[in-house]
Image (cartoon, rainbow, N blue to C red; front, side, top):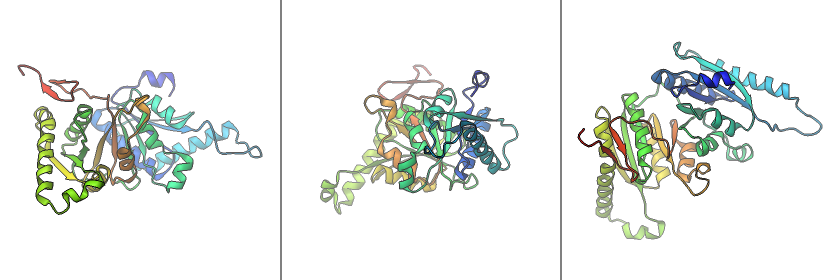
Amino acid sequence: MSSSTRSEHRTEDVLVGVDGSSASAHAIRYATAEAARSGGAVDVVHVVPDVAPMNGFYPVPPDELMDAGAAALDASLEQVGPRHDDVPLRPHVRRGPVVATLAELGREARMIVVGSDRRPVSMRLLTGNVSTGLSARAAVPVVSVPDTWSPEQSTGVVLVGVKHPDHADALLAEAFEVARQRHGRLLVLHAWRLPIAYDDLLSGDIGTLKDWAARAERELEEVVAPWRASHPEVDVEVRAVNDQAAHALVVASEEADEVVVVRRTHGVPAATHLGSTARAVLLYAHCPVRVVPAVHVPMVLDLDLETAGAALKRAGS
């Protein structure tokens, strides 16, 4: 964005990266709906890669690359169709490393939205995956919208996967706020499973499985309780299942409008690693997936967020 555009940028605004595909059109539709809720604008950006596939016999002039980028941007906008008239769309063409450029442009945005790359694995290995790259490094939540998504197929459910109380404050703050804004129901899911070597321990022991699930739900309820109190308008279901986390979230995504997961810190540098669960959910979920940085905590009124991961009501409130 130009310096004048950046000076007008507000935290209510949404940044959406496009490449001319049908998934990009879905990403614009999603971003526009989010901006309509927040009262912001949508910056629609196509980034022309600074390294283009070519060889010495067929160099591509920079001007032609920029022209092709502008055409890709126009194609994405043309595919959107009817949209919110009260949400400004601001188109931009930029040049540089795609993931790094979008991450930098979106630092002050409410979120970054991109279309989900569902191409064959062989193509992703060659070209990389913008959704995964952005989710691993962006300072704000990143939403990946699959090309199979339709805003008309709403279930009214927001799904959030909680693995551990650590980092749960950022995750639950975002998930409760999404559910509140959409007047939807929040499904808080915890999946647990012993290593395969211990399968015989639980084989056929339905009672033990039920006991462990009940214990997990009680512990999860303790983590969720302060958020229930601060968001009484949100209907919440807590569910614990004996399953691998990524599989459980992908299955549950069939009944959800959106999945919310957290990008946990993993060593140094923390901001460049995305866990295997988040990667799998980004690739296979049936609905948009929102990846929240562990350090990103939206403002929650009347709450103190403790370092232990618990949210406690202010004394005397």
